[in-house]
Image 1 (tube, helix red, strand yellow):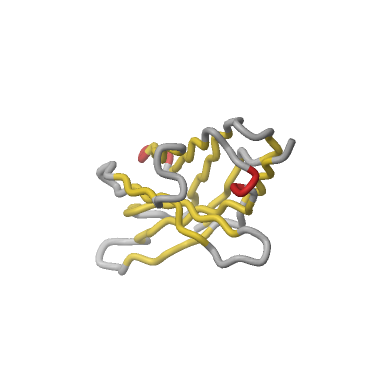
Image 2 (cartoon, rainbow, N blue to C red):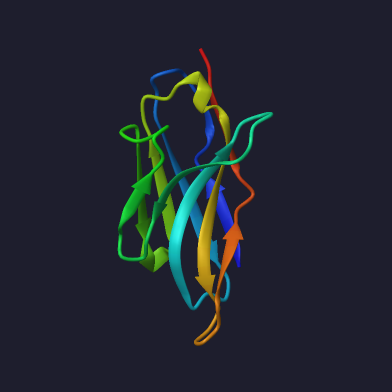
Length: 120
C-alpha cells in the first residue's frame, strides 16, 4: 500500500492550498483517513480526520480554516487549507487505516509528506 501526497508548495500569508493524498495497492477497504503535519524542531501534530462514512474531526489549531474530505471510490483524501499563516509552515502527511483482505486487521499507513511553506 502506498500513500502519495500532492498539492504542497509556497504560498503567501492569507493564501490557500488544497492537498491530496491517494492510497493505492492491494486495498480491500479504507477506514479512517487523516492529515498530520510536522514543523522543524516540533513533534508531529494531528490536524484532521475523516471516517469512511464522512464524519470529520479537526484540531483546534486549524478548525475553521481547513476542510477535510474524501473520495472513497478513489481512496483519496483532501485537505483544503485557507487563511494560511507562517506558523502553518510544515511537512504535511496523510494517514490511512487500511484493511488488505476480509478478516484481516486494519493497519495504519503513512505517506512521505508534502512541504507547505507560508511566507511573504
